[in-house]
Length: 313
Length: 279
Image (spheres, rainbow over the protein chains, first blue to last red):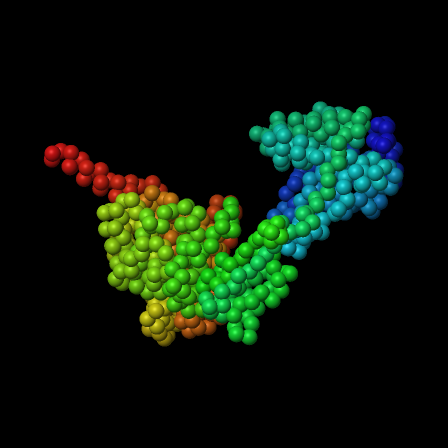
């Protein structure tokens, strides 16, 4: 089960603000990760500004610019009396906030073993390279670990369905603020200061929804500490069998050997045979996308997707 | 949204199978455009007894012969004139015109601008392959500059027509453009044109591989298709992208849509008013 409330505070973060000026390791390290467009940078800026306004030295470092590509985005935030390096060494992260499930898992090795806190959205954004096999029913190469399995292996971990909570508020994009609310429980700043800083960063029209999202995220963690929350979302399991079987009807009397189908097939599974007629050479590669059917100027190809039970009959 | 009906649309249901295979050269984009038109008709569930396809002369004009519906193959450049008469006399019919770039813009250019001006309920599908393919590859009004044809051995020096700009300027109620490579999008565009209450003009960028492509060393039909795809810019992106990419590319998608009064309804109203006063 989850550790009691007292361990929520990062080990490196002393309760009293009367911090002694010391070596760099007195900094509190927060790593925020996600996918382009989710608001990773916004979360880290809110935290950085808040820490700065409380009189701490803050260093923030990020990789961004992936917003349009759905790529990996991360942001290091370090604050304390004295911070030397802008990046967090591997294994020194006190709090890891992940806005996307697989990104959270990717960065888990950065978390301080034993005392680190892992706060992760269960939102799954499946990247295109996880779907390279386009056969219907093919397995996705996305992380198969369920939240329950991961949470069990981390000292203190929370898997929140923040996206769903934000959707209930009517704005999916507020998911990052839900996670900010969750993050706020692990740090020693007052709730009013948090909300003031969040309001500074979000567009004016969305201030009420974002503040509500913040409170929900905060409330969720508080509830989670007293009860066992239902965090488990099953891993994405594609259908074990294809929902249909693919059958290509090629009419050799109409085919004019223009080879459009051969060149345009994304799976390269068609060829022109010895008679220069289109032929399905690799039926196991065909995904039934219909591109050959649509692009055949001679109407010679028909893609049939038969339900398996229809074949059995 | 695009492909919901892909499974139950079998193009051969809409073809005169005894005429097949059609006469088009291997790799001609016109066949793809014909599929998109038939798919749009299938999607709308139009009664084929109430569908009239009028076409002129040329490779595109020949397509009406393969459609299993009421078809009317008329003189060069005049399909819009015949279709205007047909649509006025039989408002219950759904009149579709298939025409080529030479048919529509050169010899039939006059009919096109007046059909646009009247805004009679018609759908005009112009298949633009930049050349007179059937007669041996002469220069057409849409042939791009510097392109070689049998009548421009030094490369075409005439500026070419932008058919969509012409139709918009002449007052067409609906103007759109798409390439043959985007079949479901083309189908959606034709569908929107068929549903438009006034004159709908749809330009399809097709490819003539055997005559135009060969003369200009443009590769196979798939190469030509990919080239066309790289030379267009979906008009839907114009508002969303800060700096328009491919700013000199041809815009595609729905380019013009207005609700000017439709000519046929106005005409019938005036006629019935006259009939009422004279009796």
